[in-house]
Length: 505
Image (cartoon, rainbow, N blue to C red):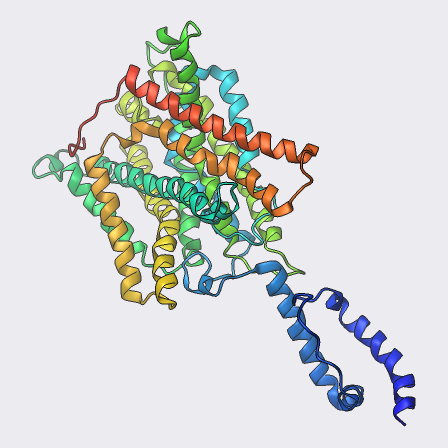
């Protein structure tokens, strides 16, 4: 009887299993794990109709384990951290976050790059930046944070983590500090436009407006995770598109200043050391304007991922449309701003130029509306750029205590970061003048680390064409970062910036 069952049922059972479980050929368990021998009783029982529900459950569980083991590679602590706590994102969330981080107040300084590079150079590098900052669509299956890049660099895990920690925290923290300055200062301008002469009786100082903005940002930062601020990012995207459009339309529709000029600046007429470093300082300004793509991995980490539905599909879908809109916003404001103001554009960018040259011949309604939406956008952008900092702070706690942060500690971390950013904004009010420096620090994460990461993960054949290409691109990214930083420092030394500690204007 046993032989009859074995002959009649084994082929059918084997074919049935192959048909029902196409992924059985790739087990999530290592090959070295010993397999449990099958019992004759188990074989007979599994071939009966009574075992059908059990087989379905086993097949479903095995498929789930394969997806978790081969595709998501989630650390159990990821479920406790703000970036990966909620993984129900979609293409719409991807577009909202990408637009909010990709279009911002940094776009208003783009015309400054034309002073040195001129039209042609700025167009070329801006196109290259746009092409590089568009995500490749195949990443993110294993890495959910830019900080995780450090483990994949050739420098080793500890040194690599340090090399990725500094620019990531510098980028997020520096952006939030800049947003406090711009948001608080614009709040002051909006209040002056709204109240008129009545504001002169007992006006708030700039520091006090920084406090108001920081308090609003910290209250809004109590939203628990990155997915929960999708609505905030949508508001930020709408306001960014709105004020970019308003500013460049007003600038080109009004009469240009009398002394506008497009001639090269005196120090840029000859190619010398100063000219060389000024070029890279301008490239740093453009890199600073495109810094939003450094949040791509964090955004993709909020999406579910499996074998049949990888997270790269909705991420790529949202990013494609988002970057079309980003280009439609950044190029007009850069080209139109330089056409309208030429070399007269102030260091504060397009918003300062609009108030300086067209404050008298533009309606108060438009000026007030522009200031209001800049404030709203600054509050919204603060949230998405602060999220990597919140995530890193909570990761320290969860890794040491092996439990999630309580709500009061999470709120304390966010209030602490808000206070720290406010202190730096008051102590270093000249920080917005360091746009080139900010852009240069973040360049390795953008241009170098992904190449090194690809080499270590994919392990291409040494000395092959693709191996040389990625190494060359990675080294060039590091060299470009050093040159941009050198150009920014050279500009500060030769041209000079007004440094005044604890004296915000």
